[in-house]
Image 1: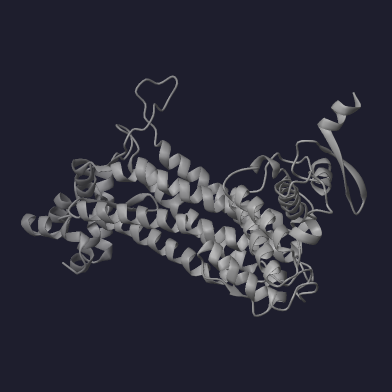
Image 2: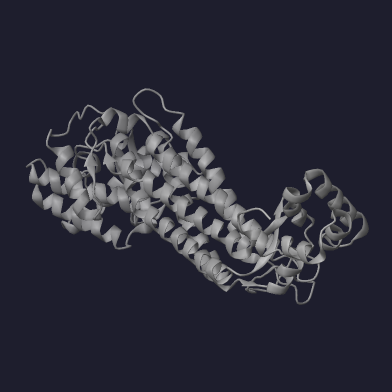
Length: 469
């Protein structure tokens, strides 16, 4: 029985004493404590954040070996263990809940322990043999949670952000193509959801394209500051317990590992105290989400119907829309886009509050920011891409329906104001609404215009261009 129990668990030690750890676990004592302390959400660290943390450990092992501070045999074992995790192995051993102790100490130690125990195995030893490879003294050499985690969040964001930018740019390009194709489709404009002057569907959609391109540009502009790493600052930014050459060398190593241009922070205290760069990036994601929410809502509105809505756009059917109403098709992709947009906006709120929660040398809300920022980047990219491919590219214009509304908008009378004055034009609008008669007809009758002149002045296509009658 004792042997079976030993196979099922082992005893490891940390600074607080002995802890029993599952026998097959690659993690160790501090992770086991975190599992007991934080059974909160069941959510685990985002994969991009895990990758970034592991890359920091790999780079640190290489640099510390180069500086003669870590035996090369240990460094090679830590590097191999890190490469295994980056290749997708041992992911089930990164088990700490997203909502954990401040700063991310539990996450940092989870990674340290997994790499240390796997390195022990690679060197022919057993898991938990701290004399062979120690998670603190070896894997975490010249590091602190306080400089590792902010650096890892930056690397993760830099890894994920290009997919968001690409998805927005591609969606903008889709709408640009639609705008060109619909350049001759005249329709009623609407402001306050009420009749406004005519507009071309291509003009309307060109605004969507420009908005998304601008949103992508804002995200792109937020990235350079994220490439400035405070790694090497250790506990409070002073670099205690790190070789003075370490910060520059580890940043160079991370640059080689990631292929991303990186720079050592000129002021590591700022890099460790402030989460402003994360809040800035998150804010650009919120703005992009707001644009997607608005545009998706317009697509839903213009596609409403088919018989009792606007029905100016025909949306591609992607799935049945009702379990009870046969043949019903809903704007499912636009609805998904709205839900993701709401989530990204909410995540930005959490990041903003976390960024404002710093005290003195450290903002301890780093684990929350790591997850929420990575999650926002991931879902926004996926949602924009899916909406583009499953909805936007398949949109079709109902040209006749668009023309029908364009010819009946009472705001055609706006073109009469330069000739008849605002007050007389308003009287014609009131008469049209009351009688149901057309603006063209009433312009001739009440405005004293010849019928041919009224038709020319009130041609909807003509009113989509600048100028006076």
